[in-house]
Amino acid sequence: MVGEGRAGGSFSRALRDVGWVVDAVAGRDPSIARAASAVDLVLICVADEHVATVAARIERGDAVVAHVAGSHGLEVLSSHDRRAAVHPLVALPNAEVGAMRLRSGATFAVAGDAIAREVVEALDGRAIDVPDESRAAYHAAAAIASNHLVGLLGQAERVAATAGLELDVYLDLVRATVDNVAALGPRAALTGPAAREDHATIERHLAALDESERDAYRVMVEQCRRLVREVRT
Image (cartoon, rainbow, N blue to C red):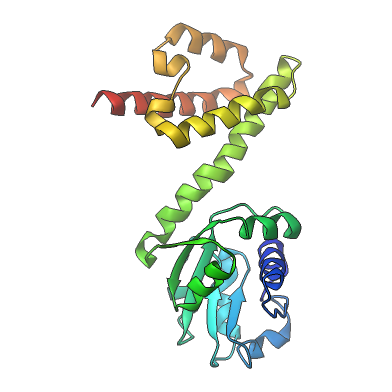
């Protein structure tokens, strides 16, 4: 396991929990040059931008060299003959929570050597094939679904505070909305003023918001209107 951050810690703990023998090494440790010796798999768990550099520092060996980066395919591992990718479609905020989520039936985007699927099977996950040419779009969708949602909830927290309310008041609404999307799809799940074309309410919202919040609100209103237009067509 190369990398001792949230991803490396999560994978290390999860794989040890299911009986794999794992040795962890920091990405900058000189010993990574020999990481592919006497092991079956080297799993590179560093930031996407550093995967190629770290992979190039590992001497070619018998092991499969793989990464967990969502936005890269196998091209960043070109210095190795046996290559794989296994990206978990879950958030890994820390090693303890991350390990639990990796073992909770998660979905993993895999490519390359069959050992990627062995990792997924060991963790009781579900493997989906994402070819190299689709990895950036796949990962962009993941960022929108997770990171951008967190950003929106940060905005909800700020705006709620101006009304003297805590974010907790809205979390049941968030959960129900996600459940509706899962059951009905985004278009049928959409409610609210944009879905009703209630322009007057949208203008009242904008007037109530701090100027720093208005651009983001307008962008999301347009995304909602796009869903409405798609329903009509």
